[in-house]
Length: 189
Image (tube, rainbow, N blue to C red):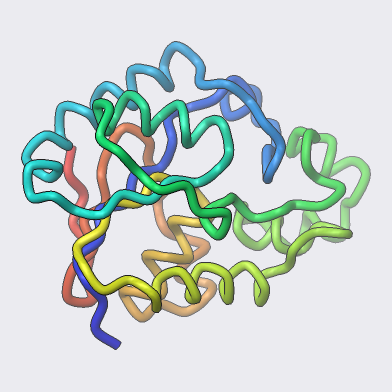
């Protein structure tokens, strides 16, 4: 399927990212480094925003905080489908706590995308991917998306035709922009 050009921004580092704590759909503010990440994105966004793309942002606070900085006050639409994977009982726990309390799940899912989607009472991969695909399939113009790490891995995987395992292995940088076009990606730094 052919998609319009998308510029994907992962939110800047949060206090919980710095602690290795699983956020899922819980809230954690940007750390000082996370604010720097959003400022780096802002410096890259000016020529992109000059093209007048549609802008969509996750409803979660860390993405909203990033968008305020990175989009420089540009108007945007909040879309609930852009929220991070709901990670069930793992939300609020560190990876070490998950390893101690759920050793079988942890051992079987070394990568974050798989681990979050294997969480008891969580959203699961199929529902998460379907939510992202629904959003993606509704786009018909160049679009800026400010959302989350795992969300972006699945988005990038769908556009680039990757398997679930390949999606889970994608790098998940902050402070950059993933430009997705014609079935490929370029990282803007």
